[in-house]
Image (cartoon, rainbow, N blue to C red; front, side, top):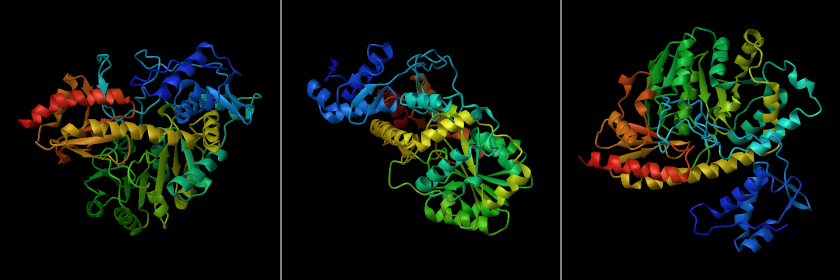
Length: 480
């Protein structure tokens, strides 16, 4: 068939996105019906007088989201999208904006103006979530009245999913484990509470300061005394750790939240040496967003360096897929895996077998890897847009944490108070978030005034507009 697509070469919207949106809307409206053949990328490129790679990018997105399917030797066809549901956010927008994550920050009031631009570190991009693939996997899971999925299941989680996670962790993160060392649970909070049952009460826990406050709340809620440990540019200071009398250290070596530090190998080895010096010491490695790195090769997980079974590894799919999935996992050292069997194996899994099976198919079918590759490229583009837009502020602000993750930090060189920077930004219709709120005790904040800018849930256009407003209100105050 022939498609007449009104491509606007003068538009700021990329041509591949124009093609993708045009075909997607035609399918959603029913103008293109399931099974209808689409022109090949070569033919459509010739008709539109554009490059074939541009059309292929649009087709790849349609394929990834389940609007299109390919049949070998036959071509591209419209996929069935029965039961398509629009995802609405709390303000009634037809598409969600991705402002969910278990890396929390102070919640914003809901009465914000419509043009408010929030650089929230909580956000992820849900606009490019593969809804079509996820929907199809849900249907496949429940095909033929699969009653087995409604049984209790394994308390540790579905064996097939644990095997798929083990395979992914070994190849992508260098984690060494067996599937019986993996426990699946609904979010990091539950997994930390379960870990408390396994470890027992008589421990003192060290945490990086500033840190992920939700983990701090859970651990103190479980009755553990928590020691805040200062950081230098390499991460948690091991000299302070040795003085703390802690026997467990909670660290984020691949991308520390919120400072964005990627811990070098030497400091990792120092932590492992500390853990091996006395029996009963452990490191909790929270590897929450290691998938997103923009400079150099990925650094393997700390667990992969561990030869003495001292590292408890935690991971989640909240950042890499979607927060609402609420699936995380623990990888226990062999010693603690045995303790789990004695003390906690009677706890039922907190993730439904249906959701676990969908995630298993997503991993095993190669969808997760393709989704990650797509999101890495997308976030890299947003990351680069933000850094480019912030260049006019470089004389007055220092940028940190820009090599990985989904946020950066800006530190003022002239000493303007953090509260003033946040307030000026808000008057300009921009949300930025102060570093001070992430300290266990705010009096330990010896950093210069610093704000955090997350960019994952913003479009490149909003990133540019938001930074333009920040430049207008911040540049003059730093000159004073």
